[in-house]
Image (cartoon, rainbow, N blue to C red; front, top):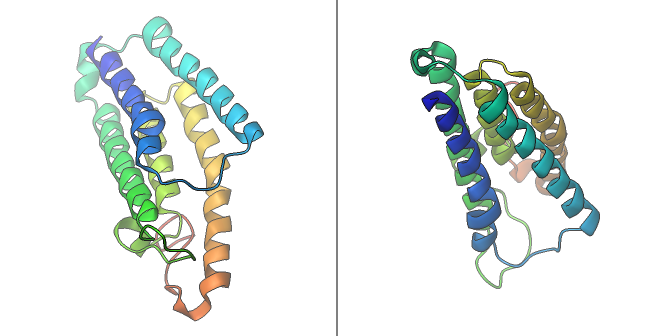
Length: 181
């Protein structure tokens, strides 16, 4: 159905960006440990299978699902989250000019409110996907696992930034959720 195709296209667009465009845009940095790469690959294969199988075999959304509030708000959140994620990655990639070393404070976009702007965007993106899928179990599990995996990383990054930069770090900035946490 058309809703299923749109959801699959959005899912694939995220992973095309993450696996092709993003790696081509980053500068050389620290190598990723083999174990981390293996587990990330395994998670992506399993998750891709579950989401794809659900949307191609186990559930067909009716055409009128395109007009449902869950689908419309969910797709809107997904697109917003993807935009935040992509912009935040861009900000982080461009903190230093070529040849520069040292750490800098990210500014702009969602970094105005949170230290983990890229993590916030990713969580919003997959929460939107789960909503657009009508709360389908595979999509909800994916959104929850994303939040439980990268939420603590945002808190860890926030703590590091505040310890590293002390008073120079924006005092009102939260770790992951604007104005809250």
